[in-house]
View 1 (cartoon, rainbow, N blue to C red):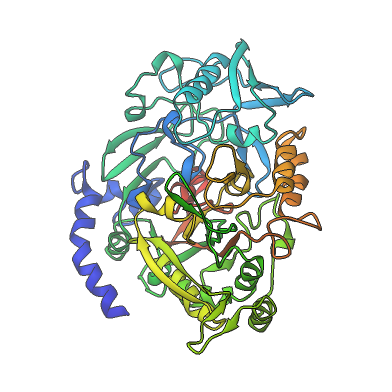
View 2: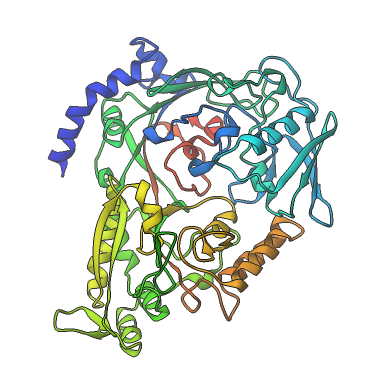
Length: 538
């Protein structure tokens, strides 16, 4: 293992060194390559190349949302999520919702300025949200009818339908200045947040400096340099002492780097696969459903027949937690989702359901083989390893699983009839809705990503969105998972199998105190520096 890692380092170190110096010359003191940056209140952090926002730092085009949900550094938000994932306030001083759930009223601070010196007003808030409603291709704003500033510090959000978890949306939408906004805003953003974006070398790095006029507590870290790197290059940069925090993977976790320690952050960045719940049928040239996985006893057997802890040890080197839902550890999680590994119990379920073992060791029933293809996205080594581990474990049950790497251009359609390894996880209950709620006009009348429909589950989620507050909705989201009679758990329909939540791993330079992290969502990127202003050098 160490020989292989050393070889990778030798190949990547030159590129890493060139990248770390881009746009700044070779001033090691400035970039922190000697460790001096920490004493000056600076940090250099690596992120995956996929974390770079293609459309720039514009909330209307996904900055702050999507797969890498985070609190925007450059812009301020109305609300925040706290370390324990409760709702807090940033620009907002108060907010409330009308009894019918169709009007949210938010009061904002009157002492905030954009970095160009202009005051931030309710008109800017209204402009931001109306702009997102019109342009966003990442966040869903269909619930918003219109945002209206009623005076300089009050904005009303008029909704098309009740949406109790609106405060979670307010936590990721950075406020932009109406007077300084145009189509190029994302390339040179002006905000009122903790940091100012000073330089962006596309494909390489972005540099942030502390906002001297920030209305909150002054950031302890004055300069943040983010380098966009593949995992092997990030490892090489840490080995060369060029960075203070380097993202890494479980496959590199045993590597020892002088002057660095390994930080593991728990996540709701989960991996699992869908199991199409309906019998096969064709519609508009697409096949929906699967003859084998449509049997509920098959789905239940698979769920308890997988040893998640073995998978975490073998695939993730122990850096992960067992997953039983798309929202483990969240305030709206229902612990009834949890199951115990029981291989013999799984075999009995299959036996009792009439799936008998043939001479080749593969079960069969009424001419249908106990077999399916488990797809994973090509080039994703972790998903591939999880798929192969799943195949090996299910073989013990008499189920034949063939793994196949596929591109996303075909994966979505094929997942309507074949299981696919997915990655999900967010700080909002809408993740449940998006995966399990029937979507009108989709396929054969089903949820968006896999054939599944349950009117009772839909009803609970609809009621949750109509609840008076986000906190009041939690119980309804939990009932959507399991209400004692039906749901998406082991005793319910079990349309998805959840395997593990992947720890986010980082090599951190000795002497750097990374502030306590809240549970990270899906995406091994911007979440690590959500609270970089609170980091400190010892």
